[in-house]
Image 1 (cartoon, rainbow, N blue to C red):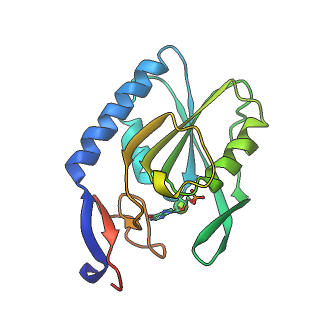
Image 2: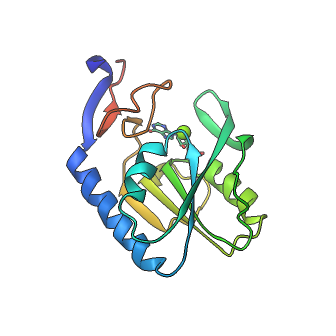
Image 3: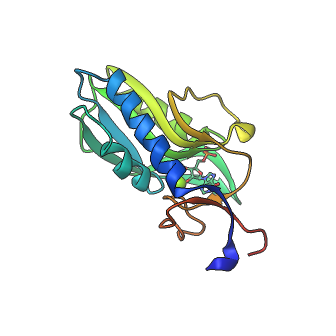
Length: 176
Ligand code: IMP
Ligand code: MG
């Protein structure tokens, strides 16, 4: 396992502190409201589960599972919904919770699908933001960390469906 885990980019302590800050910020912004946190499976689940325990506002959580049609490693931005939300978001305050925004294509697509359901408001919260690789502008309201263009694993992020359990975010070791 070790031969695939490269440099630790964000430590467990740094994540913990930043998630607490984001939770406080969202609690402040949503005071008196009851947002629905929409999580895109599977990468965002670790982040979501830590984030909601820092929230001081009543809220609901729901999940969406999507598969993006990928060409090799590049996301195409065309998304197929594998499992849809259970909650009707019309007239509700929605916060999309994502693990990472890379090209932005997947999130842009999901965002438009959800906006068509006419929520009262929609914001986006992502733990990681790879700004250098963005192909389409997506409005990010809450960002944990900006990271360079490197493939990262841990804290929900996978390499071939594994390593989501690492408590930190690390770079995938080249050739590992
Ligand atoms: P986008 O459509 O290019 O923004 O793709 C976003 C999705 O690609 C994320 O939800 C992740 O599942 C995946 N992804 C992008 N970069 C990484 C990475 O560095 N590690 C693991 N997954 C990644
Ligand atoms: Mg993913």
